[in-house]
Image (cartoon, rainbow, N blue to C red; front, side):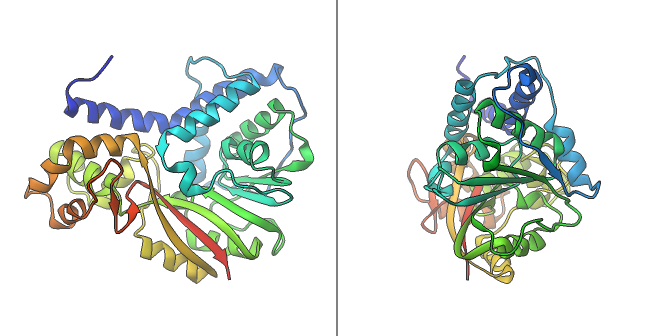
Amino acid sequence: MAIKDPKYAIRFLGTKFLESRWNELLVLANWGLGSLTNKRGNLPPISDCSLNDSTQVTEFWGRHTVITPQLSLMRTEGQDKAFIEWRAKEYSFFHELMGLWGDHNGEVVLDYGCGPGTDLVGFLLYGNAKKVIGIDVSLKALEFASRRMSLHNIDMHRVELIRVSDSQPSIPLVNNSVDFIYSQGVLHHTSHPEDILKELCRVLKSGKQASIMVYNKQSAWYHLYVAYYEMVFLNRFKGMTVAEAFAKTTDSVDCPISRCYEPEEFIKLCEQAGFKAEFKGGYYSQLELQTLTHYKSEAIADTSLSMEHRDFLLGLSKNKYPQYNGKYAGIGGVYILEKS
């Protein structure tokens, strides 16, 4: 059913965005619990190096990984592949900016913050990686990832799954052992992103690259959806800064840490860790594109919105996928890092 009122549509999409952030975990949770009798291959083992970590970050992502709604269970290899394709289409320019899946023939790929394994499967099936290492703080997410490997009958020698600690962010890999690092939407939720970046640099081979996504402050999400639609139009998050309100709109209001970065700010963190870094732009959520269509002009004209946000909106290019300073201005800020 079409939603005719754009104002209601934006609110609806905002709710649906939060739901879609969990949808991958919800569906995979059901699949993981239901597929125990449908395994094709062996389950790759999980190495637990977490030291019984119990930070708010670990507890939140462990708790939210396992939610079991009454949804259709995903039980086949074909369904899983279709899910991977669906996810790629949810965000405009996601695959293009992140460089998925690339050609990693003969390489070792590290997926830091792999969650339930969507990109692990992608790198193994479509990127031709020799080996993929999945690291996460959530044991339950890693268990789902392991079950997905069995669904595709993937050789266990091509997969290594490791649970790590949020409070002590060391990576249990030797120096210069990884050819490519991928981390999508993870570092902005961690307690010590600077230390994780240093560890990523340590394990990456010299001259090799990493593809990292963190939430983008130079985005329509920050300057329009949060600053205007949520805080001015709906009058929500009273007494909060925009950054504080932003953290309540991405991964549920209970998410303990959810940062966003200016490109120069995150590049500086990467350089301090030993990388050269380039900001590639931010891929768009469907909510951002809808909010731009219905609210950009209204927000620019509203003097109750601060000039910081109005100037950003005025600086966007006027096309279907607006750019700011020559880069796509979506929430998914992508950086290509290279070890010096």
